[in-house]
Length: 119
Length: 111
Image (tube, rainbow over all chains, first blue to last red; front, side, top):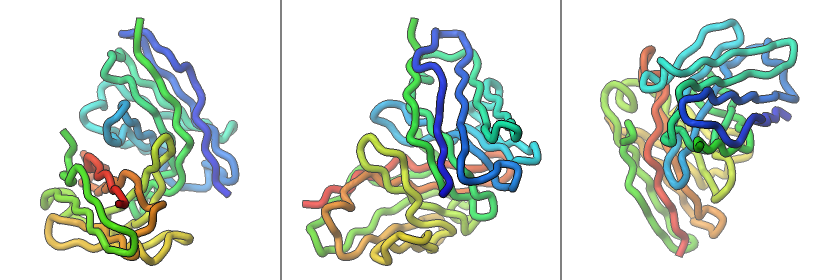
């Protein structure tokens, strides 16, 4: 069974870089699929941040593209998110997910991790 | 503001059917058969319920069905049960540059 687990700091200062990692078990990232990040501000809806194919191709939300970097570490079977120059508006629960590119659906999700941007 | 428009809330009694709509444009919902639906209970991660407009992943009850007409997609839940009370989000592929867009979500209340 595919399982994903987010990890990283729960508190980030304004203007700094948010960094999260998603560990994957039950499936080898190098075997295929896209791997993505979605966030949800408190009390609000879902927002797709970006996705990366195991081969290196990346797609980012145009509204976040200038600040986002997604990378994959196949040796550790994990992928990461970096979001730079954060503000309070970036406070959200961040989810990682396996992104089924052929169907454009997010099949498996991590439990989510709350990241608060505050000084 | 979300790219896809969903009604804020919908309600129904146990055993009834409800339909949740998701309106986009010809650049997303209307342009591709890649609409997916997610169920989210409070404090939990979203769960994939429908993909490619009308396909159900293994394990999702057949009470859940999806359809699309033009720029509007719909999720219908028949035989409503108490455990169906949750937030529902639609998502559509929106082309090479935008890729994926979500709706704002609909809160389903089972009366």
